[in-house]
Amino acid sequence: MIVTLFGVAVVVFVVIRVAPGDPIAMMLPPGASEADIERLRGLYGLDKTVVEQFFIWLGGVVQGDFGTSISLRQDVLTIVLGRLPATLELATMALVIACALGLLLAVLGTRRRGRRAEAAVDLWNGMTLSIPDFLWGLIFILLFAVAIPLFPVSGRINPQLNPDYVTNFLLLESILRFDFAVTGNLLRHMALPALALALPLSAVIAQVLKQSLKEVMGLDYVMLARAKGFSEFAVIWREALRNAILPTLTLAGVQFTFLIGGTVIVEKLFSYEGLGNLAIDAVINRDLPLIQGIVLVFAVLFILINLAVDLLYATLNPRLRNG
Image (cartoon, rainbow, N blue to C red):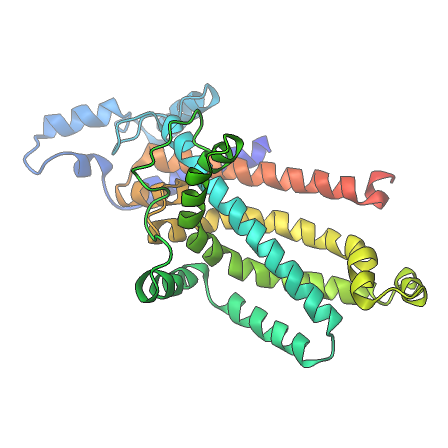
């Protein structure tokens, strides 16, 4: 994990510095003098060599100091941690929707295998997978905000509510506080972006789980369950699913990391106040410390989620747990 994070830090630090554009020039008015530019470059440490800048920044990161945002003039870590809960809640909601849809489609396709229903499920999966999440977002905006205005398409919560919570995990905290007015408003704002993110992932989950179910359905213990008189629905839910779902859990966990990264465009599209939206603004403003902080936090999330998936799979799989 340490080696991976160090590699990510090196790559992102070098790449954003060889990209064209001067962040200091973007901060100053057109009439700024050369002395003003040099003074500001010295303030942000940009007057040193790239190697010196990297180790100064890395030394600060190790101590929890990610630097100061050039565009927002605030502590980078404070900004990132303030936006991270919104992105995690959105990605988690999208994952729940994707797993629910994928499970239903996989069970339907398995139960009706060889019939028109399975062909319809495969056709639906192919269609949803071929359309990227941001295009689904545009479709939902046209359908449910313009043609039929059912859902809001901007922001995370109605500004008039302004909940005074301890954390920025507004959805989780509103549920724990039984503040269902805030919960409902948050869910309405999250519905369209979460569904846009969930549909392509649900197709992947459905196809993998359906294939796993087909392989399991031919095993001896499933045939024994049928011989005992269980219905096909009961055979799938009570016998086949518990073993077929293990590879799907690994897939869902790995895809969750890509889901978090995929929120970038969707959050911008819906003006959702998360880390992805912040990342685009940081790139536009060429805010080097903020870009570095966001990428490093994303990398930590990816590593921790993959580790959690490996541990969960080992816990649920008796062959690994007892091996």
